[in-house]
Image 1: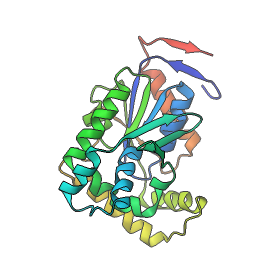
Image 2 (image 1 turned 180 degrees about the vertical axis):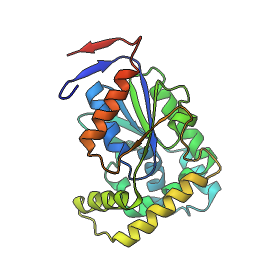
Image 3 (image 1 turned 45 degrees about the horizontal axis):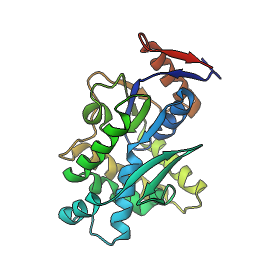
Image 4 (image 1 turned 45 degrees about the vertical axis):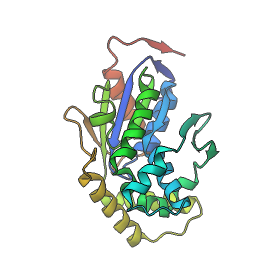
Amino acid sequence: MKNRDWILKNLIIAIDGIAGSGKSTTARLVARKLHYLHIDTGAMYRAAAYAVLQKNVDPDDKEAVEKLVENLKIRLKQNDELQVLLNDQPVTQLIRAPDVTAVVSKVSSYEAVRMKMVEEQREMGKNGGVVLEGRDIGTVVFPDADVKLFFIADLEERVRRRCHELIEQGEKVDFDTMLTDIKSRDRLDSTRKVSPLKKADDAITIDTSNLTIEEQVEKVLSIVSEKRDGKTIVKE
């Protein structure tokens, strides 16, 4: 399968997992290999959190956050790379800032916020040909997805990855601070009342602690290949 571009028509592939487990990068590359749309649900929630900060809304003020998000226009546009648009303005890089990371779990915990995002995600993915990644894809957004995966990785490895990502973007980072942030993110994601981070019963767990991105992509493609019975395959 290596170095092969191939197309599977109409599959819905759900990749859930914890922060820093590599699901976003893997989902993007898998989508590219399959010629699918990559739906980065986490980016949508980050865009909402970014808007909250930009409008100086208190992330703890549930009513104010929900009112703001209700009127937001958040779209994903795929050219060579996925672009995130907030009210038609590009925010792809801005939503990865540490201050956004610090509040995104709180913002995404509110029911009205999740309902709006889930509605948009279902609309984008309803006809298949998509790779969605987030924390509730296989349990809430598309519980009948054709392929369900759940990514995990060691905590310290996840912290190293996140620090490396931010350093490459020119950010100054502190390992211990990032460790605390990711621990807090894990707790908030797993304990929120609405659509908590949870592995679907029929999801396949992939531990990425010792896998390169290339190995992660190949592993996912192998699993997808095993699930493709009855689907139309078009090889290029």
